[in-house]
Every structure is written in C-alpha cells, then in structure tokens.
Length: 219
Image 1 (cartoon, helix red, strand yellow):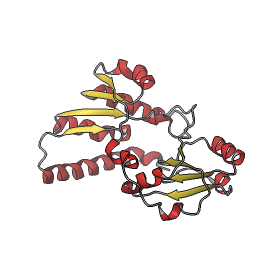
Image 2 (cartoon, rainbow, N blue to C red):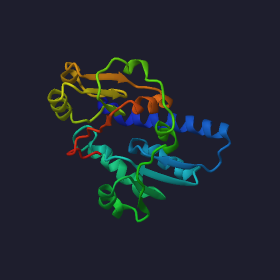
Image 3 (tube, rainbow, N blue to C red):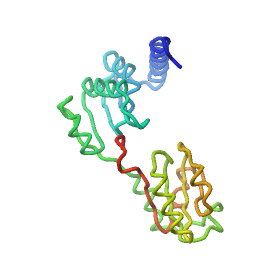
C-alpha cells in the first residue's frame, strides 16, 4: 500500500515523533534522558535523539520481532541490527537471541522478563470475590492471561475437545482468527481486564496455561 510513498511517510512520521517527544521532554524538565527502546521500527527516532539530546541509548530486545508476521522481515531485521550496534547497551530476554546477536555489540547482556510479584502474590493472602463473568462456568477452569496472539490454536482445540468437562478461559486482547475455537462450548473469551483485577481472576483458575507455538521464531 505504501509503495513509492514509503520513504516519505517514514520521514514524516520520524519528524512528527521527534517534535512530540521534544515537547514532552521539555514539559517534564528532562535534559539528558535515557532512551530505552524495544521496537526497532522507531530506530531512526531513537538514533536521532541519541545524537542530539540523550544521555545514552538502551536497546531492550524482548522478541525476535522480525519474525512476528510468521516470516523473516529483512527490513525489520536490519533496523534491529543497526539499533543494537548504535546502542550504548543492549539487553536480550532469552539466551538464544543473546548468543545470536551478541557479536554486534560487545556491551550486550541477558535480562529476563520480570513480574510484579507483590501484585500477584495477593492471591495467597486475600480471598477475592469471584468475578461476575466467571460465575456459572463449569470447573475446573483452565486460564490464560495475556494477548491472544501466536498461540497454538491446534493444541488448544485438541485439548478442549479431549476434555469437554473443563472450561478454558482466555483473558486479554485477541489478535488471532479464532472461529475454530469460539465454536467450542467449553472455550470462553472474556476480553481484556483491568490490571488491578487480574489476581482475582487468576485466584479462581485451577490451572494457568501458556499456549505459545514452540516452533515460533519470534518468541
């Protein structure tokens, strides 16, 4: 769709982002901010700010994003590599990606995902009222919390069909085509919930599952 206008659109977006960020930084009183970037798609903006106003640039690679669409996107890959090379320090969340890309910046380190422990440990200290939209579902409840994207749909369908006595509950935004799952009576999609409410939902799950595709290159 972008075609011959792609470079012009990228340049305009870069300019607009830089102007907006400079205004926000000025209003907040930031003089030499640390720029922390996870998306290589904003590489041009990040490198401009690094040279002009930032104290340092941090690249935090949470996924192999060039494979997110299911194929290797060389443009995203090249942007990620340049961002890593030009960063003052880079972090990767898994060891495979770390070993694959460490060579491009010697100041590259492992930094795993974290969790808001105090928030979720409430389930061991407090008995929450059961959320209204969980009432009436047949137990056991098999829960998934997080964006419904790049999950193994065939696995979920197989498990749900093999265990009709279980109710499979999904909480989070949906970014996948799920007609084959929505047709099953023991699979429920409740949508995104407020962060503050998640411990209450999880307390009533008998099992929590993650259904990521194990052969996915981007995770």
